[in-house]
Length: 427
Image (cartoon, rainbow, N blue to C red; front, side, top):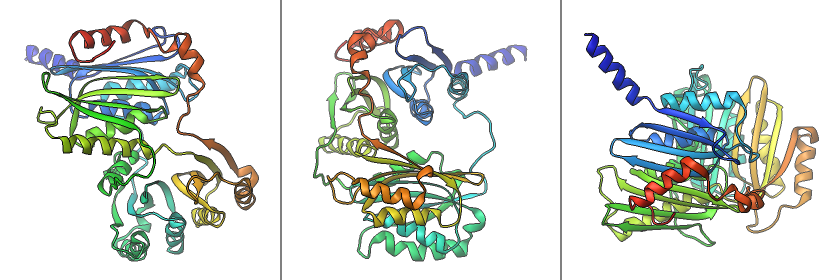
């Protein structure tokens, strides 16, 4: 029995990821290294933890050897600095070391999520929140994405506001709005909040299900090639760097049922280059040109959803019934289109972040529109900030002076091994 106990402990130790966080290896970033037995979805979970903390992945190396894998990430905070906050470091170690978030009361208990999808148009978000306010539904949290004529939205309501009768009434009123009076797909689905593990991932899934590949503007560079000798398909991504870019790519590959066996990520002068060696879940590579094209298109869509130019409006104000309806109506009346929304409440306060653009494609937002919004919601309550898809221009000089080259011992060690194994094509 003692031998069995020791064996059991050994198995547990082998299955428990080893997490190393080091600020001494790289002069410009914090190194986060994760070693563990390979499990499906483990890369996405690691990237998701970093993305949820608003950390930027400047470089990364992904290597899998049979049943074992090692991921190395070079990360900075939103200001481009190393990680120094001990609470953040501790959260990463606890989250990645167990593949579960640190124990805490579930914020999703007692909530129902309305999953909304439909044909987007100017003012649709405002109409949705107006209907919910009219039905006396208090919105606890919400996330919305608009992309190429489609809308996906998650609205979190308290269970008492989402009984079966009221949900049926909500569906009957919002369904026609979301479909836009046409044959376009769209509608409302109510699910328990605990079934939506991650809001961003669910939004990607909803947008993917209603994808439209008609393109009228430049797209990110994404290529998919076959490497038959090694049994891999090689995905290359090149585009402007931005927050959560790696998460969006890995999330899409995972939800399309591909496994990432090896990969390298590099950012330099605001540009991101990502290379992944993937297979199907059954171990086979992509076998057709049509499937390669589909993967390329889906990755382009995932990258574009958060890549837009506009204005970020953050509103912090006491929460009240109808607040979202009033604010979004003000946007609509002043010619502003909500491209993304992040709504949250804590106690009696609401923190609402909206990314808005002009309803006329390609036109800059007039200052008069922003001033009108300020006057309506309160000057002291609104923070205005320009939003650009490429947010890391500050690093240009640093990258040229050593931040982007020779990234030191462990990173180069992993990359060199991948090269000598024939798993990456340059080093």
